[in-house]
Length: 105
Image 1 (cartoon, helix red, strand yellow):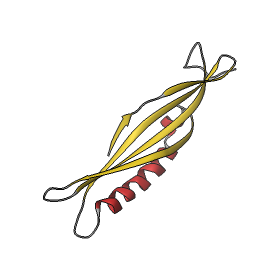
Image 2 (spheres, rainbow, N blue to C red):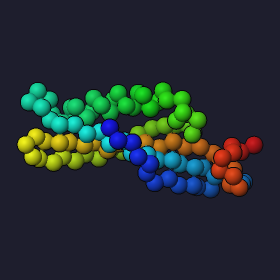
Image 3 (cartoon, one colour):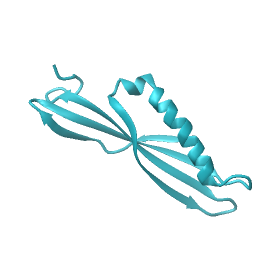
Image 4 (cartoon, rainbow, N blue to C red):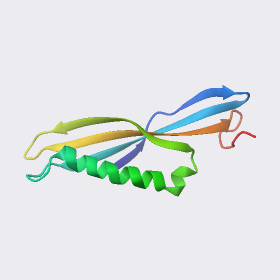
C-alpha cells in the first residue's frame, strides 16, 4: 500500500471563501496467486483501506466528505502477475481566501 498526495485545487466559493479540494492516491499492489487473482486481492485491500480512511481522525481534521472519486487498474506479467489498483480520494474544506488554514466565519 502506498499513499501519496495528488493534485489539489482551490475554487471560488463565495465572498472571501474558497473551496479547497485535497486529492490523494492510494496504490494497492498485490501478486496474483494460484488461489486468487490480483484484482480480488487488491479489491479486498481497497475495502479495508477505505474503511480505515473514513475512520481516521487526522484525515477528518483536513476536511469533510472523504470519498473515492475514481480508480485505475494496471498489471505487469513476469513469473507472477503483479497488479495495481490506484484509488483517488478527495477531501473538501471551506477556507478563508486570505488564510487557507482558517475556516470561514
